[in-house]
Length: 156
Image (cartoon, rainbow, N blue to C red; front, side, top):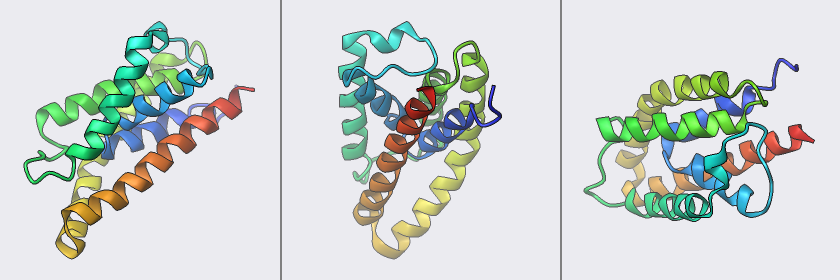
């Protein structure tokens, strides 16, 4: 097994640190395009999950710009990151190493949530909540898509 085979799991954890639903939305988009992920998780094949994950991802992107949006490090924000990173990390891990992939993704997402929040707050002070959020959205969505694509390419 290649030593970098778990890299997508770590990277999807980094994505989850900034946007909790983006990892699930990126995987759902791949599954809707009939692309299987390396790790075997039956939940990801359910049509309701795929559509729901996409809607939740879009909803998070819209809600993040609201003044009332809570910090990503509140309990529910961290819980969402743990769940999303864990599922996505397992899905992107090589078959048979799903648990390790989940652990690596969660272990990346939680501490990085504090770092990405600090960076976002600095950006908000300089350019405002909406602009900083849109820039962060663009980066995180692109990163999520790239990580999932990398994992799928490595599967072939």
